[in-house]
Image 1 (cartoon, rainbow, N blue to C red):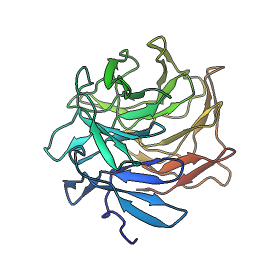
Image 2 (cartoon, rainbow, N blue to C red; image 1 turned 30 degrees about the vertical axis):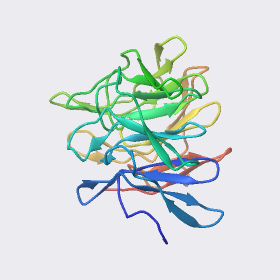
Image 3 (tube, rainbow, N blue to C red; image 1 turned 90 degrees about the horizontal axis):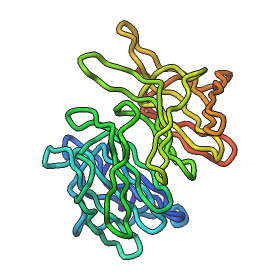
Length: 278
């Protein structure tokens, strides 16, 4: 814990290949614009520079580009849903602001993936539920809008397959709460969406976790409310975009159901961790 950042929630974290960088988040209602780089080889922390850093925020997103951490959006310390962000270079410990020209509307609880050349952000909440997002190219510091399907949502998940972003699940409210078991595959090369199958799909949910295995998206956990009861499913599904098909995950020896947890892909198995069971 020596030189570790202050404790916080709703922050982001990326892996650089040698360090974990954490940034932003909230403690006691105060969004931070601070963070830290953790080196597991030396078990040591180095603070991230705050000069030219984005305003403090929570419920934002972050991706690793191969040389920079790009953060965008979220609820900032000006009590606004931000459409600003920044690129952090750990080699120079420096920040560069992301352009706001043609940027998506400010939002929180959206998702973001790195395509290999662009950060793609989609969904979230901004006083409504935008079903449009944007692709940010850090080389040109420019934005291009994405198409406007599937249904708008927040607390969904997104993975990058190598050619498409797959979004799934989530929640939206239009006077009535809607938990979703639908999703879509976004191809940035054609700027087009393809709906994911609902045959054998897992039950609707939000605040679940998702990983990409190299051939399948695995979703697990989460939460939904049926109007009378709260549910925390300990079952999920494996989605194969090549066949547009779902296979349920086993419940044998599965962890207890939960929401707002994390998951990573190890190369052979999915590892789940943490979060709440209410």
